[in-house]
Image (cartoon, rainbow, N blue to C red; front, side):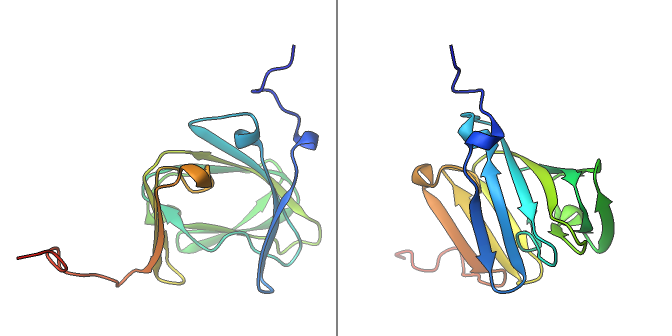
Length: 166
């Protein structure tokens, strides 16, 4: 008897993400396909010369990356480090673990990306100086369950009482 919690990666469809000429990747959301609740896992393939999601860090969720094949660079905090097959990177919440993968090799960079799937979560994007706020479902989670998703400039701020009746 088959279980909804056991899937084979070949049976999960690829989704593609592109933005401009720098960001492009294919992803299989394995954790969601296997009905995971608190742990996400995606198989990601990053073509040569491309980057993954923008440099970011979480304030609530922890991520990790395990490189399956290929080579590339990892922007981690203020450093850029080489990565290759067999490398594992822990990415706890916080600015020191801001991260982005770059495929500066000649072959596709394939890796597993793991994430706790807690909501709410706040993401900070240091390059673009914005913040993302998620409630109801974590980033990468079920969009239908999401009750709040907003991206705002980091310097967007109002007084606590603004808009409230006196």
